[in-house]
Length: 308
Image (cartoon, rainbow, N blue to C red; front, side, top):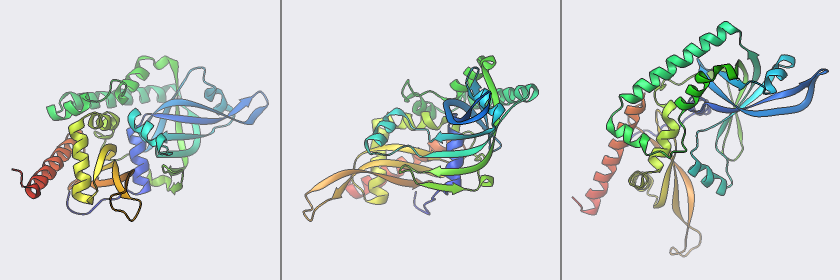
């Protein structure tokens, strides 16, 4: 990992979040026979990012489908993919998952556009499933370690295709984009900078990859060693928080001196960033770079501890 630490811009973080997730919360203005009202209707929907633009599926019977006929304005809230164990930890810290806030117009798709969208979704699904089926044993081992409750994007998309008649498809035209950090601070991002990242065979696996790593005690110990090797931070525990094509973020429980007495220590959760030597364009490359980093750190620890 030695070399330049790659810090992500807010625009890159937004792109990665949108590419990794397929669930969002849609907000539209409630409508009645007299027109728009001030009340907001919110519900969870599915989406797919295509050429930087979200296409969303709303269940039949959801008020959104009526609301947008009267008033097209809407907003989307998309959180970073966070497995349950990390979600509970963030809540205990008084933090929320980072997220993307989009404002824009919700445009119902015509029948021919709906068909084209379904065909595009099927092609994407086949591409990702074919890639996963040919992945190496090391990659499969990490993904299979994920909790049974960790549902993949492919499963969600397959449900949409199987029950297509139960959904109404819309295009979401983005007018503004913001990145919201874990403390609730808002950072505005240029809409033109929010495009799909190149690593389209990495982010579809993000949630299962993160959870698979966190379910493995040896891999969590490796994350602890990363903190020691590169930040001289002694960690009692560590979890993978997020991944991207340039590296990953780790949440580690590290010691922090609270008094002048060096023996009096308190452990706090702190975020650390690690960058790869090269860009990970897909899942296989990411896992290989991670495994290589693990081996590199183990070798370093053995060299200064006298173990061979």
